Amino acid sequence: MIMSLLSTANFQIPVTPMFLMVIFCILAAASIIHAVVLRYHWRNYGNGALELVMINLIYLVGLGILLGGMAIFLFAYSISK
Image (tube, rainbow, N blue to C red):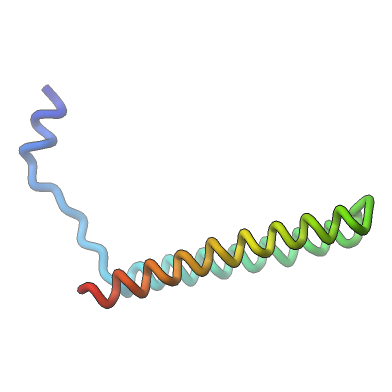
C-alpha cells in the first residue's frame, strides 16, 4: 500500500552543483583535519615503524581515492546540467 503510494507520487529533490560543491568542500576539510589528527597520534603513540608506514600509506591512498572519486563525480554532475 505504502509502496504504491510512493511510486505514484512525483517526489523530486533538486540538487544543484553549488550545493554539491559545498558538501564536497565540507567533507574534504573534515577528512583532511581527521587525517592530520590521526597521523599525529599514530606518529606519537604508534608501536612500530613498519606498521606506521603501512597504515599511513593505506589511509592516505584510501583518502585520496575517496576525495578524487567525489571530485570526479561532482565534475561529471556539474557538466551534465
